[in-house]
Length: 400
View (tube, rainbow, N blue to C red):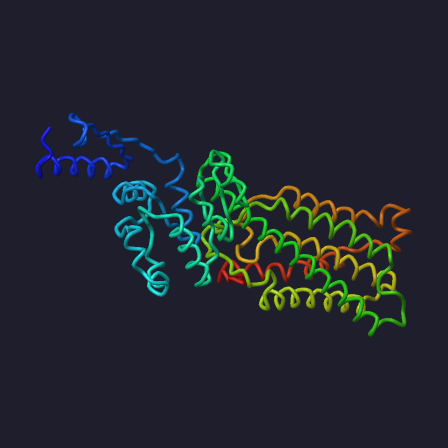
């Protein structure tokens, strides 16, 4: 048929309309005379986004993650898909435009870059290189041979399960369901694991500051009376309470603001100076309070030592629950039944030891009065309550 300007404009309008609907297009052409080829039809392929992608994109924004769509599709198709997924698609850069940018211009434009269309494999690799060059940690998802250069250069390479074998072999992770939402779920799980490792370290170090501080101070100020702690007492604290409570931190559920924080800088340590000062202060307060109980008790050395030791144990148990978060007040956290069970069991066993002859003899334990238990509760709960008030009132962020 006629292939004049009007017909060409009509075909272009149809291409633009289909691309604006997010369709990928295949043009079919034919020739009547074997020489002049003319467009006969357009076939549009719809590739709807997977369920949950819009929510995953919103989560990524809250988590401080910049998502850039880099595709070989038509610019209008890329923009339509990006908008459907919840990305800003007002400014779409084509591969042709990108090729004219030098490295300095590319680095300057990265912050506002969300969609790159008609890109080449080398341009994908260049985008990764530019992002890493300005200090970003870069994850790349891909499924084809054309994605391999970028996957090789990325900090985290993620392949689609349905992708080519070459892409999967070049990747660190493979998404079995090909869903970006699954990637975001994995990222959230990674943050939760890092959080829980940090919580376990805070608990162990704070209890050891209290424990070792007490032994040191008691040796200096009461060493002439007797051993500050017996070996079996130390073993009870170290092997049962510390290890089981630390293991329970692995079951700690994610905190409410887990995906509302900016990404952790790779060079930032798990235990910052502020956090070390905080846990050292809490441990030191417990150690000094236990020492004062040891020195001020009028019931004899055995009673004084058991009172101080019980104070350390109960304070350790309370701290295990209080250290469930360095950011959030406890009432905002989800339940951790295993940790609660371990804490209550440890306190119950500590209470029962003086009543069981074989244990009382091994631990050199003596019964404590109601007044003694009131002192134990005061020393054990005071630091945790102060920390809870600080978290609730000021929401102090100790770790970025």
